[in-house]
Length: 180
Image (cartoon, rainbow, N blue to C red; front, side):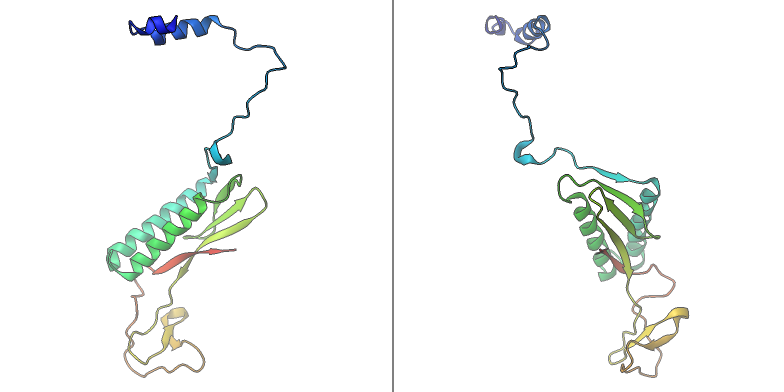
């Protein structure tokens, strides 16, 4: 009947009318039920829950990247390293193993905490770069209060006007890493 209706372009409407007349199920336990699974066993959807507070942290991370681009330029190492590490962490979060439900929580102004349904947890942590002197041979770094000090006990610190690797009043360069 549907083949005959196809000739006049009415196969779809005839098929729908015919399907409406058929019963919605058949009670025959001898008929095998097909196992309907996605191809390859992978689910069609990946579940990632983000707390409201974590969305604010994600937005802060994006704003920090914009501030780095504005301050140092999009061609700078400071911006490129931070942007690449942020992208890598988000990709790893989205492509976690199948069947693992993840929940994102804030863990500081630029860091996130991820808990999973299999009792696992890890963090996506922003690790700022230490400001150091860029003069050759000087191994000074800044400490609390922007005081210059040796980078390690045996480091050489030259007595001169230190040239910082990034300004104290600009956005803090760094990168996002996974902390288990």
